[in-house]
Image (cartoon, rainbow, N blue to C red; front, side, top):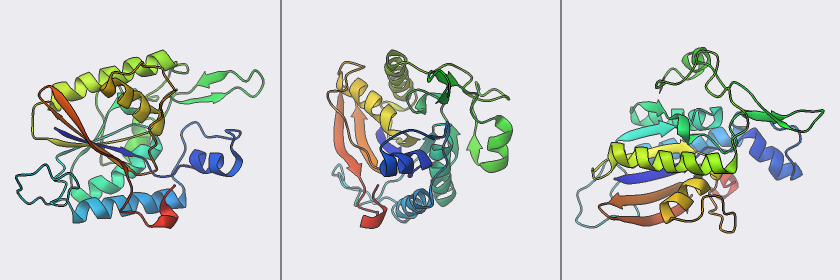
Length: 241
């Protein structure tokens, strides 16, 4: 299996942090910015133009012979679904929602009086049907919203990353599938720590991943090859965030 971990395009929360270095005024489930949409369209165009593959005996470590994606999965946070929606339309592949791909913490806002984080429902089945009808929802997405829980802890995030890795390998391990997932920077780090066998909650090592950047990991029997990390060469300099 080849895994392509793709971060969502720039969100309004990303821009807020870039401009203010604070989370004051953050959205619980932010949309893409104008630049985020441009990044997502660039990503989709790049993958579409390089979707076809040419047989080669090498590992094709730069995807010079194409990506040949076979499966697309997305977090149910709006910024990831919006990014994945551009790619699914470009490649005419199903975009399947995967609950465990969400960002660390889940859907929450800090209470204005106590400052304590409060969990919120998340988007509903009706919202996705109306705004992103190409998204395939799996079991577990309630009509009233997919989150409906308190703030996720760091230990819970680490356990979720392990669960996602195990399920990914169960579904696609030891196959020739080429799987792209649309997810988030914090969860990317939780996932990479699980892949590398690092302590689940360590913050001493941080894996940078820019908006719409691609990381490729090749899984085969008994080994994982980190082919490339944080690839953004398909973006112009002014769209790298």
